[in-house]
Image (cartoon, rainbow, N blue to C red; front, side, top):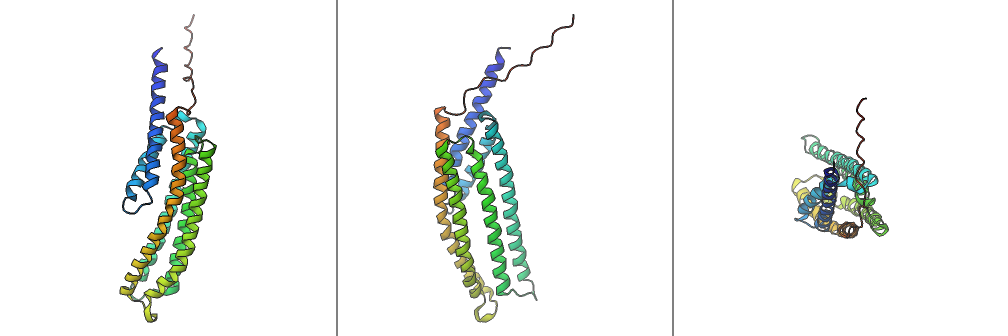
Length: 244
């Protein structure tokens, strides 16, 4: 069946092109994902790019295919952790506005700190997914950049946690002028607190640039034909001998 090898080559070529395009979309999405307002576009590009890399993973060998699956599991786990953090914050907020259950500074501070701790854990998990996703098809420099971006991201999140955790005290104090909870003062304090957090978010550009460098290197390797290595099509099963 002479047509079988060419059909296999065509499918392999499609998988390589999907991965190449997917990595490029992830690269662009990573570069703009930390920016305010247009960050959602970066998220969409990363999502679409990740799907393409998943679809094209088999052409790059068993190690890469396995790592991509591990990344998917880690992302799902990270989403679950983040959702849990959000649920804790929402329920604590709802319970604080129930009549007869006035919030206290200690309760609000504790809720925010628990929320931040869970978010840091979620960042650690999803950060591992970013490392595994292209690790097997990176060269040594690319792998170092992936690990460097991961470390920078974790250090940044911990630093943000420390700064925000300290700012929570000021935020909560502003919510309780004179020792009594004031909804209007709370709204103003929340807006100021959100602005501070957004300013700290600009530091996300540091790990984003490091990750983008790693994605460029792997995209360039695919573009130059360095990866995947040339292979032969899978052997055809031998036809059974006719009975005598």
